[in-house]
Image 1: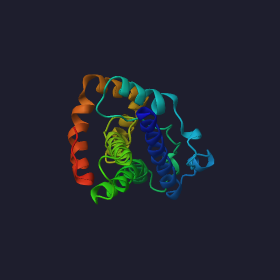
Image 2 (image 1 turned 90 degrees about the vertical axis):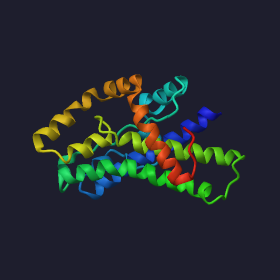
Image 3 (image 1 turned 120 degrees about the vertical axis):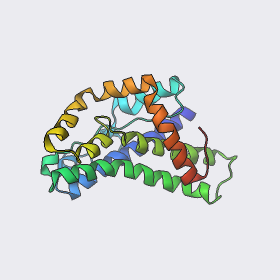
Image 4 (image 1 turned 45 degrees about the vertical axis):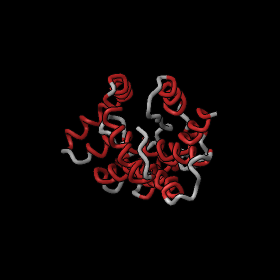
Length: 205
């Protein structure tokens, strides 16, 4: 049951993340996600067998202290954006920002003491806060194809920016490598603890 609850929260949060990318792109001039039918909260068009299901299940099986995953990335044509370099950063930032806002929303009842810490509802809210903070922080890492790499690349000169973006085809290999070596966990856990303390007044790692 705990795994099912985790996957449901994770999928909901990842769908919001991707829809926010698409909505921001649409507002900045690119309607690719809209025309592809991806500006919807229906999870079916957003499902990715590996990133939405297998990756979080693998992390659960491996006993990882942090569980994360993603939905299928919404298609964005950065050349359609009114200011491609700046707007690429804004579109990329929209997804992680949505996760931080969700984490804050789930944390408010905890922070204000509206829910008893011994209840199932409290456990679900804590899980929702942790999952959304994990998604937000993880996606801000400057590792292609994560959002952080596009934000970082947007500050570089054109040729360097394209070199960074060209690494996206190796992205999941890099992510698995960093997971295997423990580098991602060593970076994520201190940051996650900081935001858990800030948002919910707790520290569990």
